[in-house]
Image (cartoon, rainbow, N blue to C red; front, side, top):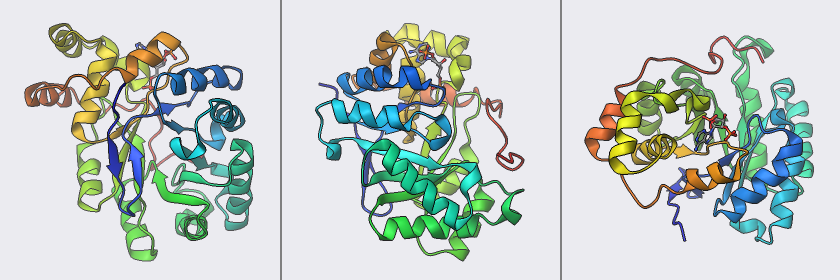
Length: 277
Ligand code: A2P
């Protein structure tokens, strides 16, 4: 059986370092994809109200036969719900869609510095309520840059447990990852395969051939070896199994460095400083 390491968060909670992401998984494909992931050994599912598939995630977890306590569930606050009362309603809505009375991790999806008068701090203070009342076992942020994190650090009490940011071989995010490391904020890498873009890179292909793994497995292992939390998306059962089959090998330090050197600061998603939701 595959053994997935845990990462210890700054509040003492543990998160499986590897999971399943359902960004861009259509609601009608989500039940099958999550069912297949859980059957293949995934125990961490990352969704968001924005993805429109929380209900199907919840149904797949409920019908899997697994205990709720054995599945780590993350969801995120939508961009239209940053004001405190809206955030409270959105959180209730997410719990009800997921069919659970708590989530393991709840995130602000985007900082939206150009909306809500740039006030993501009161939004964060509302997430602190969910953390204190136990309905969110951990809270964190997504797409926050160092300057957004610095502001939370000086203006609020509970530090974010994670920052979920885009990281892939063409966007290695080393500065922000270093900042997070220095502040005990775990990094979660979204779109770890660059939405498939980075799979055709010749350096990655050469490493894959040498170690006898696929390019996707090499990239996912690179994330794990760098210490980030990763949850690739796939709707294909064979690729879902392929992606979790990365715990029987490690990359050499040289291979990790060679992949990190592919950085082009090239995003597949929006720039968090400009994105208005
Ligand atoms: P599919 O869902 O058809 O498998 P990311 O996680 O970086 O957003 O990348 C997701 C994209 O990569 C999806 O288009 C997905 O397609 C594809 N993908 C996921 N796993 C693999 C794999 N092992 N090999 C090739 N493509 C993959």
